[in-house]
Length: 333
Image (cartoon, rainbow, N blue to C red; front, side):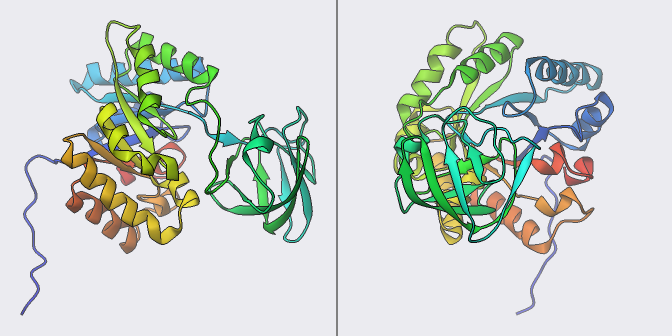
């Protein structure tokens, strides 16, 4: 039987595009080009930048909407209980396979052999024998012992560790609160501006969403809440989280660190189905077109990945580094 690869383009694109704003696309000209290219929602990552820079970008997007006669929405992505390392003397250190290194919750500046944790409960949540993963799993340490606030570790997979990179403890229950003081401040600032969506990172249970709703309800124009599912606890409580939230995001970055790689597509498919069952919108995110950070064309695997997400029923595809820091943000959209 011959294979027919012809298809008819739909008059209206049903799957929306979410684009993350960053240094590569925060100027008015590029924002307008991205809207013209097809962006439906701009994501402001509250893990980077400050209130002044986010306010400036917010106004640029709203002004572009007025000039173009469009209604592109804005999503503010709150940090949530994400664990990060602190600051280093020279901006980072080199981790070498087999070397000993100490991770500490003491208030110190990092240096070779010493990694500060910005999360002060890390020594209580981790245990000897556990893995510590840094920068989305690029580097791995194994905890040998814990001495008060110091975690004595060995480097399993090394690399260059820079300021404020993420830390994951797979299969460990993190006791950090769902919203930090920074999250409260960021949420209120964005709500005062009139943001359309708030995304909560590392949503673990429905109560996390309810807590954020109490902040949203302080304002006359409430934003919709998107729950980001990216760890074991969130997956375990997925149904109740979907019920509580206005929509969900399949955040494959940290999910791919917390889970085995082959488990991520299984989780993605089941989350899309669960969201559709409750008639809640779902966004699939992370590494959708990762190669286009440096290249003008995507890989065949990336095209297949997006095609699978669309055919499985996702409501939106999100671009992260592709638009925030890539060389070809407009082409990626």
